[in-house]
Amino acid sequence: MEANSTVNYDPKEFYTGSANYWANVPATLNGMLGGFGFISNIDIDGSQNFLNSLFEFLFQIEDAPSHKYALDCGSGIGRITKNLLIKNFEWVDLVEQNAKFLDTAKKLLRSSSNIGQFYLLGLQDFCPESNKYDIIWCQWVLGYLQDDDLLKFLKKCSNALKENGMIIVKENITSSKKIEIDTQDSSFTRPYDKLKTVFDAANLVCIKEQEQLRLPEGLYPVHMFALRLFQDSFIHLGRIFSYIKC
Image (tube, rainbow, N blue to C red; front, side):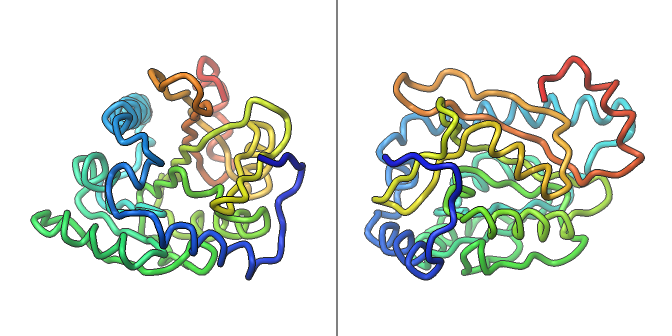
């Protein structure tokens, strides 16, 4: 691992390196989770608990997203869609840059009646439809975007949200203050403050945050963030959510 404070390299080289790495990864649960397939249930349980607590509170103040449409960003073989999103939303779209993974997702999800579109694109090139999604789920994928592209992507996601919609980010966090660079898969792991700075730059407000529990020792800490586009009407939420760490 290398350490740095900014993450903008030659785009062609950076994204090609990432694509080449994943081209050699099997389209399996272990492949998606870097050999840690056994943590999948722990991860999904943590995500479901996060969604439950988020929706429960927002329903109380009549500010919750609908359960109509979700987007799975960097979906891989559809692990999160199958085990989480289709259980919570009427329709789910998937976007993934690797054709092998997306074909596997189609097979694994063929019996599901609430699958929408499959998009074969990297997130740096993806532009979601405006005003379509209630939840946009981004997990273990934003580290494959350079800083400039990450900011652009979050802004495009904001435009794709319906009323009361939210972006959920679930990502590894470095324990240091610096960005750690994995040259093997061409990815970055950002520190907490760096992620929050990017959220702020994208005009996104964090209204709930939670750390994933029960992960094996030696892995990065994993944090979940519920983000909304800043509007004057949400200022009062700062008081309502004062007990939530954001």
